[in-house]
Image (cartoon, rainbow, N blue to C red; front, side, top):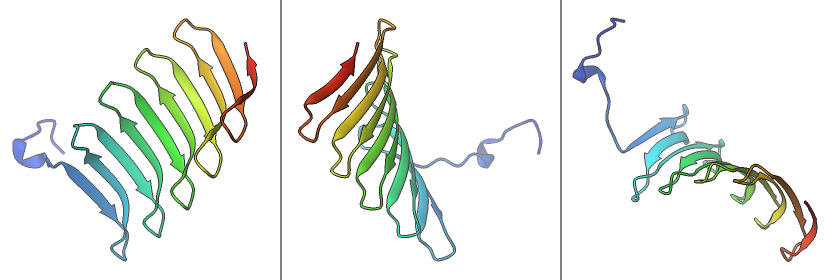
Length: 122
């Protein structure tokens, strides 16, 4: 491959799909109507199980989904630069969260099924 890139060697599209031998979409790279890009990975049944997204506000997220499509874990970098990890139950409700606040302080929170804080530190 030469060091020079020619325009004819560049593929441009608003969506790319990677399919398995059966024609099932297993991964996609797409732009949403708001212009935000998402890379998604699907299982053999076509159910998205993981995604990486850059949101319109500049925040990023890596999400993991169960076989029913419910979000079960999220790793996020918020617009202010603070990271967080959320663990969710089968209904998609956050039950545990680990974060570093924008001021640099740590945080841990455990929630019950009604999203009531059961324990937190600090």
